Length: 167
Image 1 (cartoon, rainbow, N blue to C red):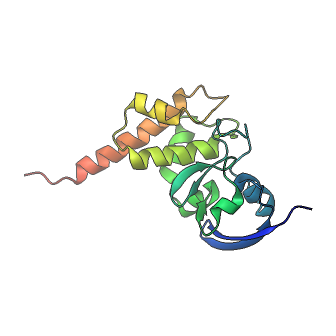
Image 2 (cartoon, rainbow, N blue to C red):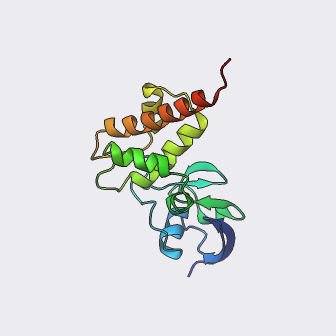
Image 3 (cartoon, one colour):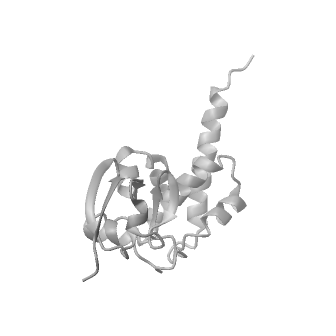
């Protein structure tokens, strides 16, 4: 039996201490050990984006990272972001635009879209497409996803413009 290691980290704001095999990927640890199922296992090569989570505030592919590499880190999954309400505006836009269908890719799409909005608040449609190209969706054809993200960016820009005092 392979040697097990104890890892300590924070997952969705909760301190976690678990024994894992050193070869266990972060996505498998989250899904199997912690029963956090929002992020999915897709290609297992870091290409599809279904396993996307945040590690210390940065988007990572859970299938490419070992759980032991998350030692003392802060991991955030779709469940944590959604429960706090961080994604409410994006979730509403995805719903309004029918940008989610089977749901397999949705967690990764929302995490990626949130990072895009955070990093590039003035992104145009081409920039949205390019940024989101690391997340595969087999159902929507992407147009609705781009529309939803563009809607959120536009709404935020309008709110910001409305807050600028005029003379």
